[in-house]
Length: 248
Image (cartoon, rainbow, N blue to C red):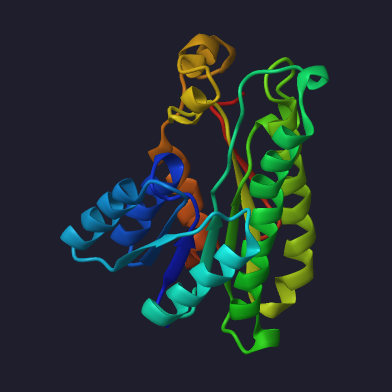
């Protein structure tokens, strides 16, 4: 059976690192992106230059119609997926809860929670033996923020990742007998540009003293855990929340 993975938010950071590593291990990769087509195509070009198969596919996962169109494209051009990595996510500028507007909260939960659930729904419809599939793996990208809370910075983001933890546990139990494993990774302070998008480009450096390992992590280190969870090497692992956080 062909190994085909859809990775949301794969044009940069953890998603891009996961796409490149998965391709090196024999996966055909659907590289989802929201807006940066050039970055997504660069990931595809890198994969193809090494002899792999990849496809860049645009969709804002906060919109169901775009998710459905994305899956239709992947079905037609790569085939039925055998793994999903729910990596797409947003953060916002630092704020206290008493400063947050509803528009901010809806954007956060529409993308980080509802988008992930809809993407997983479509994956289950393709992978579950109940629906004629051959099984597969779903890896949700949560965050150490789900257990730390991100007070004075991103409580809404942390709450959205707490929802992902709960969703991972519930879905894992729901589809375990249908050939699908569902796990999550919870990255800690990782060197990616999501911090700059939240107005804190030096966040990892400024907080690294709080990490027992005394440094931030890399996207490649998180990708190693994700690709392991996708693979047959973790075939008895489901409902697990794996911290990749340097001990923080």
